[in-house]
Length: 361
Length: 230
Image (cartoon, rainbow over all chains, first blue to last red; front, side, top):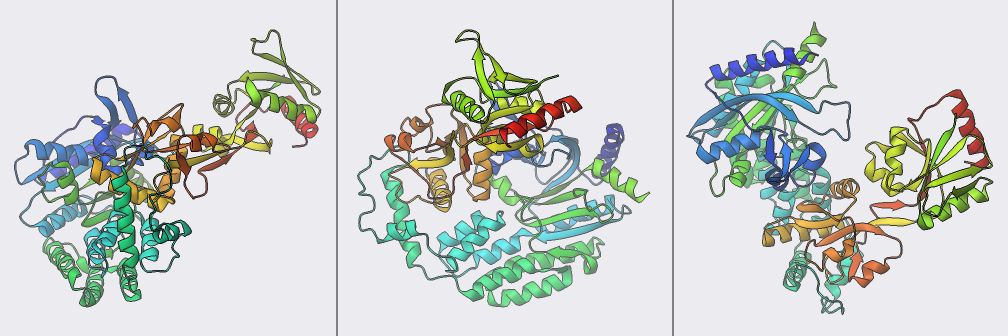
């Protein structure tokens, strides 16, 4: 695969996005590592290259454009805004050294607060149109549905917050659900702690930055949690039902409407899904055949918190998606220092697109 | 042609390695002056002794510059990405036992499991505005372990020595380090999490999968392995 070919494909895609109304932008390759580490946690080090700058401290070779584009927009962007970019991103491949560690991404991002569902549909439709005729399968999902389901659980706010914090980590999420629903046993150490009348009195010095008050606060929280009744089986089943939804949009919508009858707090999220389906149809997307999976993007697309989508080659299931994207409102809030703006976007990988074409010819 | 055997160049690890080979009819010895890093192998022909820092042996094995090497499992797994494609363990030598563990202040009576550590990390970040710091030199192993354990909101800070002291010095909230008896941890008012260790390590004889495999070298390797009974 010549990178020249991928380069000219990338430029063609960027031109298509420009034609759709996006302003071309560029970002530095070296990004402050701190921002990305604070967003994604220590794990990002296994997926991105970190390097040292004597004056600026730890720097990261951009693993994607989304974060710098959001920062650029939040700093001095006018609203609404549509951006396109094209350039190389860098990914460490510790687990899969055969995968590319640098590749092109051509992206399209929309910052617009007027009508989020219309913006979702706009982005998806532009990707579908740009990639039309490539024989790809599209998959969609909506992280907002699962988030709403968890937020509507009849349990303490602390438990809901803990579950939401781990919504991206399915195994950990499951373990928490098991514990909160009483399906897994309370560890011996926890029992002993809760039974003790003065657990802090064990005759060791308090060392380190985490103070005795913080320890006491957590014990208090654990006591309160132990008094909390378990999450009912019905509620556990409801979350499982939501996670299992995987069918074409109209059936998924009907299914979620049924679930939301018992979970009225989910209604708004389901309404948003319905409005998005209408907006997609208005843009000429055949919603009746479009797949929707409620758990789509749950493990791989960490910053997306609403609509998510991907375009895949069924002829080459071994390849990563040709395109992927989604809504990331929460990211703009975390990067915006008090400001936030609804945002949705996605990227195409020109190199993967070329490999897919090769497989088809 | 010769094959090269890399052995830790000093201390108890070297002595015990010499003993282990000696008990199996292969005599390793240092030659020259006390300070000179050269050695000899008796009992099998065609084997050359290379004295190296235990920490460098994984890298030399992975590069194929030595054919065999004695070092800790911890070092191999920390330093080599896809270690099992680069080296093959031939024998566990029964010494140099050490567990890589996570320890927190003993006064953290509310933290015993990874689950607790994660919850404490979330609260810590909310209160102090930065991710809870765990001091270690085993970055890859610890990161993998914490990811599997579902721990978030932490950061690893590098500590190449006196790691147990970082908590008292307020440069870390927890540590991940090698321990054999736990004595140093207790002396520093730390306790080990009530979880399986990150890794159970011991001195191990490794074979490089990438070193020169001429017929002659294969034969020498076979003879040596037969003599050692591995």
